[in-house]
Length: 271
Image (cartoon, rainbow, N blue to C red):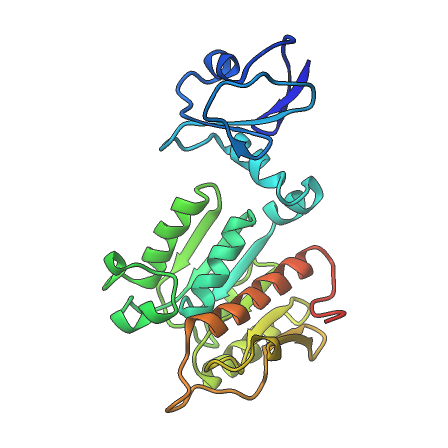
């Protein structure tokens, strides 16, 4: 009988039960999943069944975790992204969510840059926890990403980006995600990166404050290598703050645009 265990084909005897399979293959497993549903009692397995054996608190080996993640993407997508390097400039509301989304899909390497520390006001929209307060954002984000996908390579730079250091910090990336708060910072980054690497794409965001309809946030190509996410209008100002839902929508637009670019697709096409 042929089944799949932790996304790998396994040949086993007819009449095998899920408990017997656990005892043979992973005696310490305390969570058993058969065809997507938890198995709380012993069940007989049949041809083609898919089983996941999990031991709580155990970090799966790299090849096993990759196989489990790839099953939710497709092997072709996973191969493309696991060999890619993405830069994230700024680890606030946008950047922290972008980094987490990219780690969850299995990006091979992330280069994360920020000079700030986690403050209480950040918790309204940024992907940190109370215990991160006072830590450099680069340090806190690297630790949080390691809890999500410990096999993504993380490089951090706890510095303020300038026209002088942008080219060297992002020299090895395939795509850059801009996640700054200020228009001046965004303009500096786009100009510095595009001058140094005119053929490499940069995904920026503008117009995402408040709680206007989510569907006004869209993805547009506005130049050869420039992708812009947002409504291009709604800036943060008194009475219109930056809030987790709309910032998160924009951040995931950016992460999805990065993924499309890595796969050779056109971001925003058909929306």
